[in-house]
Image 1 (tube, rainbow, N blue to C red):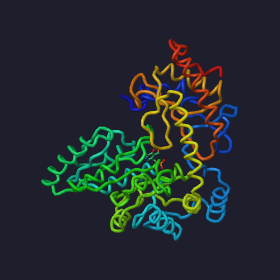
Image 2: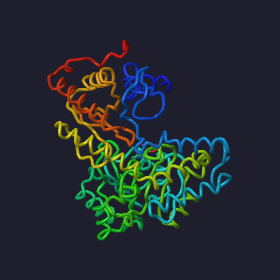
Image 3: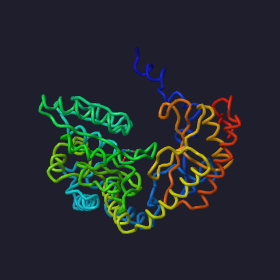
Image 4: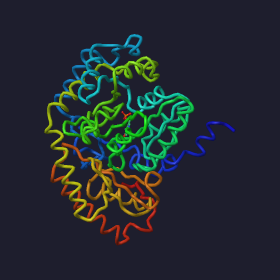
Length: 416
Ligand SMILES: Cc1ncc(COP(=O)(O)O)c(C=O)c1O
């Protein structure tokens, strides 16, 4: 069979909806300055879909640093991979500052969080080692696992009894192979907003010999007294052996980093294929990240503003009777019951009637019959935005419960 023909015959679980969904539910174009209000299909909407947690995307100092970095060095610089010709004092400075901020000895930059995590996992384990990981781990962790030649054990999300069993099995196995054990969890789970049980996992180190890697993409900059992450929030930074953060969320940039002990970062520098065989992070990103990190460190009011909005939003939803799961982070999932066609009609109503833009998540990411409207509050939202949104959700939910969206087809967006 012709490979191209095979691929276009079955477009995949998302691609199958392309005709009905592209440009609206998938690949929507948000235009204008990044903020709480942006333009979608020619109209201003209230945006709850961006991980711009601290509002740094459009901060004037950040914009200036980005522009100066680009003007001085261009996007081409440095030319080459770090090891060959892409090393600069700014990359090293950023790594020193990141390591100090998250309380680790050393750090190394990653060009994208996603690829970086895959490569960290790939570098850290060989066929004799065992990985034990949470069932709701992000795609970058699962894809890192796909490169792993040894055993892996998954435990149901945050189920510590099962993790313990996994560790018992992993210990028996590595006793035979002479390998080590890597446990991987997220700090903040990006869909549900609940936190990895890092404290309990660290406790297990008293009984088992393993190293702990946390993906704190959503926790870096938002969680903990200084914003240093979910392990700081739980007071267990010393128990986390490897801390992964991305610049794509609270830092409103691109790239990421891994932080750990000095010998391990040295090992990664010389073994991590995503950084050895790919060009270094461009200079404007590095200069811009230095400014962002400075603001994260020196402007606690950004985090305070974020949490004022988070608390008002989550309290408002809970008081209005909505199920927002077990979130303990800014990520706010509003869980409703309904079909995928109902979900599309709700989304259209929220966007067209109320001018509220949030992301919609359906099966297979959440169980069949569940609709998740995922709200991401940021420091640049206002309490009026919160009130307006909760009032709109109440009206929409009354209609949902009344069956007004039932028996409808997939929303028709062709005439909007
Ligand atoms: C939990 C988690 N890990 C890793 C990533 C990947 O980060 P990046 O966007 O920097 O590739 C994301 C981004 O969606 C994420 O949510």
